[in-house]
Image (cartoon, rainbow, N blue to C red; front, top):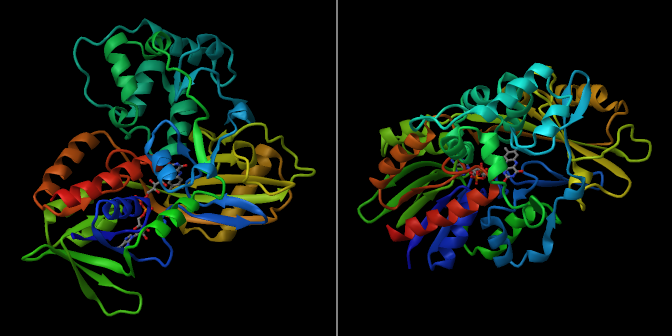
Length: 453
Ligand SMILES: Cc1cc2nc3c(=O)[nH]c(=O)nc-3n(C[C@H](O)[C@H](O)[C@H](O)COP(=O)(O)OP(=O)(O)OC[C@H]3O[C@@H](n4cnc5c(N)ncnc54)[C@H](O)[C@@H]3O)c2cc1C
């Protein structure tokens, strides 16, 4: 029986451990924190269920639902309330509904674009010119999303759609994120039609069967609990410090909270860590691999859950929430009206919102500063002046990897470097997708690679 060490008890590491055991390996799971789950954390505050990290996963990517069904949680799956799906954008002191027919930031309904108060007349005219584009004569190099969107539809679509939407998902810089990695369909439509808007109108996607987002009744941490219950792995609470090759396999030096450091041996090692956490572990083994790992940037976020009595709440919660474009210069990046987006979240008679602040400075700020900043914006945007009853603050420093222009070449270099060390396998949300289904799919794939070595 193969002995495999999995380092990192987030969703990537847990998915790898689960698959390894399913395939007959004996697993030791090394996680530095007392709790498993990494970014997946569900809290109960003022009778409201608050997701401190991710709140849902995309139904269109099957890996999450497949695992959930395997774990016997099918009856726990809930869908977003898509009949109430409407997202607003904050512009010039009011909330404006996003125009109909958008595919991410790309317009596909010109009538909706013509009537939205989100864009100026000049901005609409510029966006409409996109329809006249012809396919480029030769394949285009990878570009930033900002450059692509600016070139196609103009600056206003960058500022009022691309930037807030992408910041909401990646917390990143539109002028550095890769169009090829994040929106490959747009690159394909550009190559074939010239105009992405014409391409979207010619090839509309069939509407999703069911709702776009799914979650679990008791919160996403239910998935962690179920995985943990299913994995028989020996659990070691310790910080992994170094990975070494041995004559017969691998060993990892770990430091438990109360010391001393010890070495754990295995036939293979799976690292389910962020790149900046994995880099120091492989520095002595392979400085080039460590250097590659340090090249990925991460963004930081703070999520803030606030609750109030619903009775007398001053703003209608008639949608999934709102995004705040950076050009509007407020503190908040986005805010979800949680009780509208999902059932089983806001307690009876409660209003529950979840706000996002982006950037390292908010992770370093005190609770008081965070509460003051969120309260100030919610007062201006939603007219909420009463202090919240329940408060949940979660800081996630350097949590979201950035898929910049050139990510594909980086990934190929990483794969080549990793291939020099059979039995050492890297997995995590920095490879081929940041979402929950991606982490599950790649974690399970990592298990197969570890066993094939
Ligand atoms: C605020 C936020 C909101 C998000 N929302 C969504 C969403 O709605 N939908 C969605 O699909 N995705 C979302 N994501 C992305 C998704 O949550 C992550 O991609 C995913 O959870 C990452 O899991 P992971 O296991 O790769 O990493 P992590 O969760 O970071 O796990 C890494 C683990 O390794 C441990 N560790 C680190 N160093 C060591 C060491 N040296 N030794 C031992 N253990 C170590 C850590 O303690 C941690 O438990 C969101 C992310 C953030 C930050």
